[in-house]
Image (cartoon, rainbow, N blue to C red; front, side, top):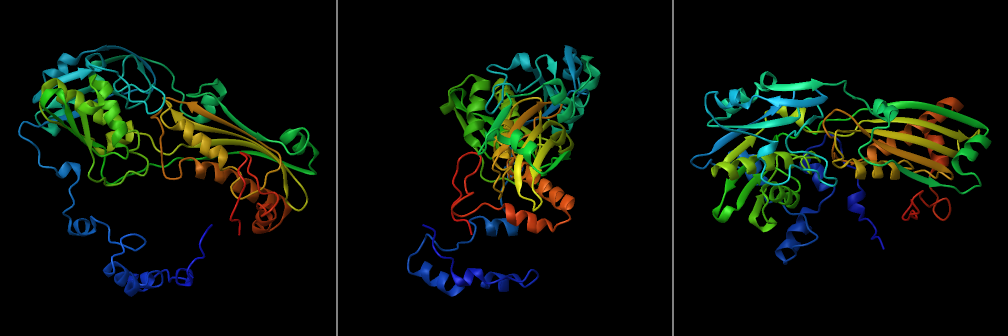
Length: 440
């Protein structure tokens, strides 16, 4: 059972008050100090263990780690087109550039050329099909970061590509039937005929389409990996990642090693927000492959523009909907199609779409509803996790509908929302059969 909320915590805080005054409205500092003095270690507020280091500028991030003697630097040669077929690479031109120590492509990966998080459909380096503008095609390892970046920037001069028209929007992908995963459908029928029949019987109907854009995570610390070869062929990778164990498995597969031979360490991140949950894998793998080949430490720190080109962001969505409702604004039936821009591979698009479908109801009872989710395959970076993870994309759809119904009726949008809220003892089951509890 939920515990009653302490009265102290229900006191309103002033938006622009001194921070100590706001804190005092929520935390009894004296009681907290006494509890800690008495031996309490759980259920009390404690300072963040790195807070002092953060404010003093002494917290060590990966690029702050002192570089070992012999450290090399890596940069990626990127595709200059969004779609096509790679037919040739004149990599000897890159190898001859000043400061370059080594250049490798997909053919040189000792293990599996894949960094897909769920579906194994995401190559570390391009092995034939060009999938998006900025796709990594080869890796340059040089004595300095500047030399590596200058050499990698010559990619367009050494790649031979048969170009093809790209598919860039979710609506284009949907029209072509191009998806990274099978379509998802979720339906609930409380009346005969389900959503379509309910919409047809409704005294009022509304249909429409709209788009919602994605956003870049824009973590302050960019993607970075520092790979250090160890004795017995093992590998130690410092990686700015939200998922060290997944990085361990990906690097192990890429190097054809056992997982216990790969040690991935992330002391702290300068932000991630979902953007380093799966997509740090490519950079960890490339740095580790280079370090394994050369038996020297290799650091790969992306420049921000390369980060934007290679990594994905929040999924943008396109929606097509139809609802039936009465003169008061009660939603009687709803059908919606959601199409996300997944990008060139599945990444985490499946769980994102699942959550979008399961958040379409948001706070509202939808007696007859039919939802369809499509993860559109486009010639763009693979979009990935971002705070909310599909929830905002699902909830915004029904909120848009509520506003549109209110406008059509000339009613206050808040009134329309209230009459559609979930109930406490009835009208309290979601389309995915979860009973709504603790409904206030």
